[in-house]
Length: 191
Image 1: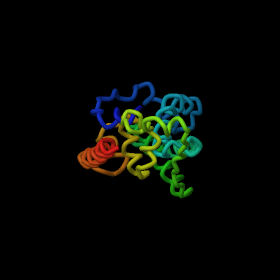
Image 2: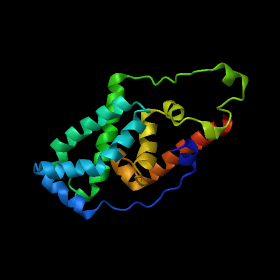
Image 3: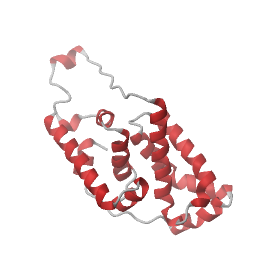
């Protein structure tokens, strides 16, 4: 997804989690490995996408975060009181694990610049906002900001679901996300 797509995108309604998947939650919580495997199949891609986003494009760190999130899910699934919120709950665990790994690593995201002679002679490839690399934009965001944008655009959660994940009100999420997107728009226009 391009940066321009994110800053221009409006909230879209999401379909609720399939009732067959929701029915697996108590089985998996009781230790049913087949039910848990089906949950992994249903939500792993969403969790990996979010972790990658929060980790600023660091694939290894994202994979570690998802693996850790699944371990936590296996041990704590029984604490989930509303099985229909399984997706939001798993994404919350994933976002928390990704942020925790970032803190542990105290990783500074560095952008590697490569210049070729012909590029220097020609027009600046970054003069057009359409050519901005998502990784460069993500590198400028704090992990908390990447989490907010990731929950909205990589995971597709609405403001109420994000609020539940982050411990904020839905209006607070909308306000914070609007300010962040306004800042990204201004940066894109400046560049």
